[in-house]
Length: 509
Ligand SMILES: Nc1ncnc2c1ncn2[C@@H]1O[C@H](COP(=O)(O)OP(=O)(O)OP(=O)(O)O)[C@@H](O)[C@H]1O
Ligand SMILES: [Mg+2]
Image (cartoon, rainbow, N blue to C red):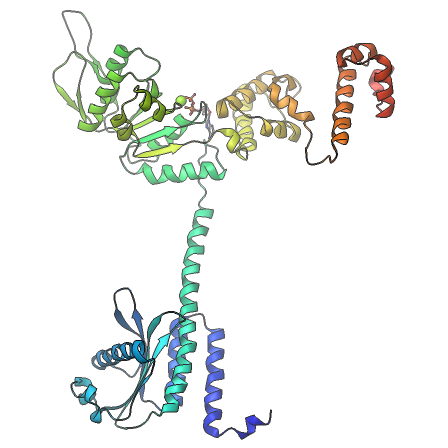
C-alpha cells in the first residue's frame, strides 16, 4: 500500500491519466468522442503537439484519419505514410516507432511535410486487437526534437491497447445494434388488411412476400391446399400492385374442357361462315392488369403450350384468327396439386412451370397456423351475424375444440361452419351438432402427460366411458352394460368403485 507514496510525480501523472482513460472507456459509447477525448489526454501527458488516431481497413488496405488534433490535410498524408511504415514494421518486429529527430533519420529525408512543417519528433504505435492490426496512434512535435522517450512509447502502447479494445467493442456494439434494429423492424412489421386474417407468423411471412413481389411484374405461383386462401392472396397481390386500377381476370382452368378453355383464354375470331361470333379472350381482357390462372394443374398439355407462348412472347392469336394480339398482362397462377409430380409424370410442362414461378407463395394449411383460428372465427361471426341478422356466442370450450380440429377444408370449411351456425342457431348458442365429429371427440380427449401410471389412465378412460354410456342411455343400466360389453353386476361394481353419481335431473325423472 505504501508503494503509492513512493511513486514519482511522473509515474503518478501517468497512472492518473490511465484512470481517466479507463473511466472514459466505461462511460462513453460514442467512439468518436471517446477517441478524441483520449487522444487529447495522451497529447497532454506526453507533451506532444499534435496527434491522430488512424484506422486501417484490412479489406481495401486503406487508412483513414479517425480523429486528429492540429493535423492539417497536408500533413495527414505523412501521418498516414508513417502509419503504413509502422504497421509494416509491426508485422515484422512488433515495435513502436520513436523518432527523436527526423532530420537525422533517412526514412524522412524525402517526406515533404516533415520538412515543410518542421516535424522533428514522431511517436507512432500500432493499434492491435487480439487477432488484427486495426491502425495506429500517431503523435508528433514541430520544432522540438527528442520529445518522446522509450517510456513514452511503452505508455502509448498500453494506451493503444485500451483504445483498440474500445474500438473493437464499439464495432461489435454497432453491429449488434444494427441487427437488433433489423429484427425489431421485422417483428413490428405486422401486416393488417381489413378483409384478410393472418396474425400467425406463417401468414405474416406470406404477407411479407406479397408486399415484396406486388410492385414488380414477375409471375407468382400460389400453392396451398383447398380453401387455404389462394384466391384471396392472388387478389391481394393485384390490389397491392401498380396494376390495381387495371382489371383482375380469373380463369378457372379446371372448369372447362380443353377447346373451350383455349377460346376462353385467347378469344375467338369471327367466322361468318360458321356463325361463330367474335369474343375477346381473358388474356385480352386482362390487358394492363392481372390474369389469375386458377387450378393451373388441370390445364391440358396443348393449352399449356399456348399459354407458355403467350407469356413468353406477350402475344397470341385468337382461336381461328391470324392476327397477333399484344397484351401487357401479369400472370398469377395457383394450384393445390404437386406440380413437380406432374412434371415427372409428363403431364405438366417444365418450361411453363419455370415461367410461372419466379416467385412461389405457399399458403400453409389452417392446422399449421392454429393461432389464426380464434381471429377467423371472430371475423366470420361478425360477417355472418350481420348478413343473417342472428348472433351466436362461441364459448371458449368451442374455440378450444375448433383449435384442436384438423381442418381438411381449411379456411373455407371454417367459414362455412360459422355461416351455418349463424343461420341455424336458435338461442344464440353454438349448435353443437354442427361441430365436426372429430372436434366433438376432442372434448373428452385426455392429456397424456397428466396421468402417470397406465392403470390410472385406464381407470380414467373407463370411468369416462361408463359415464358417457349411462348418460346416453338415460341411466338405464342394463342398456349401458350391454353397450359396454360387460355384465350388469360388473357395471354396478364399477359405478360404486368410481363413485359415479346419477345427475339430479335424471334422478327425478
Ligand atoms: N386469411 C383469410 N382471411 C379471411 N378469409 C379467408 C382467408 N383465407 C381464406 N378466406 C376465405 O376462405 C374461402 C376460401 O378462400 P379461397 O377461395 O381464396 O381459397 P383457395 O385456396 O383458392 O381454395 P380452392 O383451393 O378451393 O380454390 C374464401 O371465402 C375466402 O374469403
Ligand atoms: Mg381457389
